[in-house]
Amino acid sequence: MIGIEGERLGPVPSGRRITLWTLNSLAIVFLALIGVRLQANGLPIAIWWPAAGVSVAFALRVAPQRRWTAIALIFGLTALANAIGGRPWQLWLLYGLFNAIEIALVVALLRRRGARFRLDSLTDAARFVGAVLLGAAVAAAGITTANVVVSGGTFLPTSIVIFASHSSAMMLIGSLAILPRDTGKRVRPVELIAHVVVVGGAVLLAFGPPGYTELSFLTFAVLAAGCLRFPVRVAIWSSLVTSVTALLLTLTSGGTAGLGTVQSAEAAVTLVVFMSAIGLFTVLVSVARFEGRTNAAVAVRAAEEIAAAERARASAMATQLDLERQREDFVTAASHELRTPVTNVLGYADLLSESDLTTEQRSWVDATRRGAARLAGLLDGLTQAASPGERVRVAVDELVGDVRAAHHAEAVARRTELVTTKTGLHVIAVDADARRALWSLVANAVTFAEAGTVEVSASRIGDDIAIVVADDGPGMSPETLAHAFERFFRGREAEGRTASGLGLGLATARDLARRNGGDITLTSSPGQGVVATLRLPAAPTTA
Image (cartoon, rainbow, N blue to C red; front, top):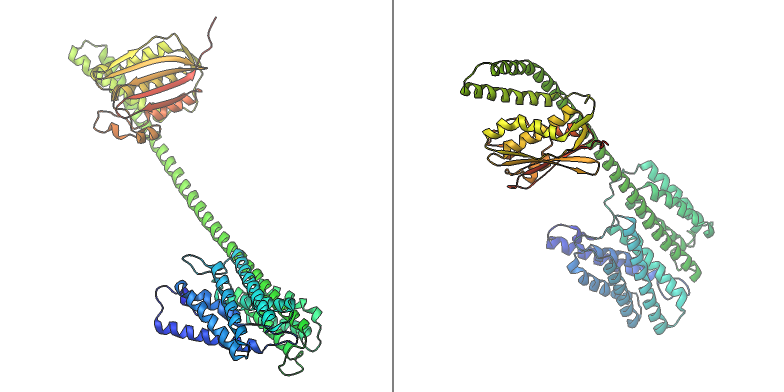
């Protein structure tokens, strides 16, 4: 009898909507008429009001734009039921009004934008319980005041019964309309039967013929086990049936008489407080258990995803290491095979340079030797020794002079001016490492500063000597600069130029500098050249 209009996507067919509203309306009137008959001696009001539960469920499930229509309908239906029950017109009018205010307050406190309210977490359950208790308190205050003014009577017992009866009905019946999407395991029939038997025994012991009402707490213990074992829906239905059973046993004097009136106001108060406590307890405990199980499932899925990601990462690393090994094997093999012919070329070029040659022939031999020497340098970069050798005192001016002489012919061929400055500085490094590192920097500068200027200078910065190679070539883009030291990387600035190489020069130069306690840094802007700085430890000054 609880509609689902607010849960559907898109418009609800008009025939279905009419059916849902009709069934809920009939349920509210029917349960309100039953509530009017549930009386206790000494109390002018019903001891339980199940219509409040269906009313709040109905108002929470209808589409948001129709909730005020639903609340107005609830006002009319509850007023009608009280009028049929024979109450004075002032009371049935005020009862209907305060019932409607109660439902409007609960719905307003639970309203959400874009989604229907559900008991998905303990926070949601606390919001629902708080809204219900506040709505029931407002209804209790209003209805009790109306009774005192119109019919007389005492305020406290009446207000307690109204508050507890309305809150228990809204929590036990209303919560069925906003249950979470519980995906827990199905309940085994044996477990459910055992639960029903034990709960039934506890209720009979407290509210049946034995009359041990002081043992009603045993019912909570059994219901708690159900809340921790069963899905939320089963736990709430169990508590609702338990509460109705306790109500019927109270109305039948523990099952020894027909349906009648509760004999005392104290018995009525005890009953409805018990029912309200069951509702509050069940909603909070069952939803908290559902949230814990949901969070645990999320954590398990997250752990599985992390484990899968780690496995994929480990596989990718293994693949990368295998590729690195294959590349190193290829480089070693290729270098070994190329070194002998390159050495032969250099040897024969040296022999030819000592022969009587014409100027043109000597230029051919020099070009051949420069190419072979560059190729030998690339091979050295591919197979640099693991042991760097012994560090010695190296004169910077001599180092720069030798590198300048090695690149002089290349600079002339490219119409590049190679400028150096004497400094008198010394570094501590492996001589061969320092020469190869600076050789790579100057080679790059001469290649890219075609028809320009390359300036090599040095200065002391703290405990280091900074050898700066600056050119006025095209410079590097930010992307090229970010990857400049990666092996086998060649930036797009090298495209279309007569720049040979495998993209190893800068990477090898930095490795050489670092294993000598130094480093290489680059700064550049597109169109403004490159400034490469080779830092090496400064040699102690001699007396």
